[in-house]
Image 1 (cartoon, rainbow, N blue to C red):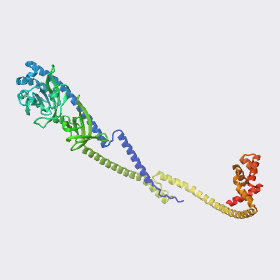
Image 2 (image 1 turned 120 degrees about the vertical axis):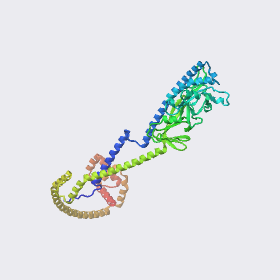
Image 3 (image 1 turned 180 degrees about the vertical axis):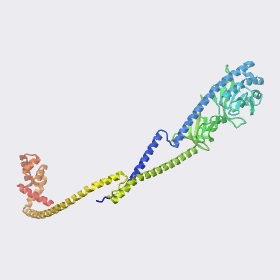
Image 4 (image 1 turned 90 degrees about the horizontal axis):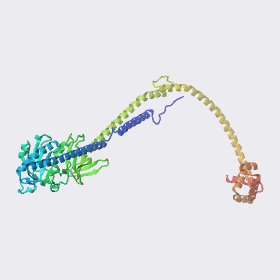
Length: 541
């Protein structure tokens, strides 16, 4: 017997390759989904969202803590300045109003105030400290209404030592006496035109507040003043005191620990129109940042981030709010350049593409190698078997060896079965010939009978009365359903007894229906009835 190995729709090698390919893909996808669900895998967009969210929370908390601490110290400074001022005036036997145009009294007062003021400045995380007195040393000058005496100390560096303090406003000799040298833009008195709300502040009806950003006269430094009123026990307004926060100080002391490139952090007043020049800015410790110019437009993005649009650049980030005082709320912005964000996402997509490509290439090569290594001996054995199935060579593949043993055992049985089938086929051929002969004989007899039937039908048709037969045909439609059923049974050759059993009716009922059939059809006997029905059926056929 010849065994033929025909090529199937898909070869074993291709099937195994496909199965292995999808198995590896399924395992890889499952692994990636598991890593994603457990937070070990995420998109660049999600990473930016997470990092910016954490950075925003950190910066906002840092600002809340910073302003709370500085405000507490500012209130303590105001109480200390009040007590020191009243003690100095009492020691001189003067009232506050008597300081006007009294250089000696102001000298003694500032000499008492400079030491505690410098001590507060050394402890505070700010760039300067001041006390502005609501009096002037010379009221006869032309612009005396805008001049106020006091002391304004600044830090010359990020250090907190006394040697790094400089005197920006105040009596120069007092500063030198305490080891504090005058600023290169030193003036003796304050110019209150830099404080537009000074007259409102004189009411003293607030705990503390932060001024707008102002430009220090004759410098390029932008600062804001944290202010608290100094009010006497009798309600006399002595002036203002507080701390200076400069942009340069804020920038270097509030740099953020972050791995984000060009991180920009803003602290600006909460307003419909957000102006960067009205607030402070800082960046990350590991690089510089780009400060947006002009007003900012904020748009909500679909992923929860904000798009912050400046006049020159666009950013991606978060916005939060920080209460500075009871009536002041500032906004914090933590953001990165939109171009950096898009560049990182594009880079991530390219890396993901190459990673996927390399992974698929590895999967394809791996599946091809292992499927070929696994199937090669099987295919070689099958090919050898196809060429010579009687080959007794043993292969290293158990399935091939078992197949050879099985085929060898089946050969004998197959040959016996084939012989039995051959004998059976010969016997069936003889029977078939006999049946064909019998069929031919029957066909001849049938043809003779059919000719005889046609002859008898023509003879009977000649014996039939045409008028009675025509009446018979017309009255067939008058029979009831039961009468037609009985008539059809008679035509089929049923006897009266058979009809009684088939229809389960009585003999009288059958006789009743027979009378009706004969009467309606105009026949006198069953023979005449069957003759007419036979004639009718012959014409129909």
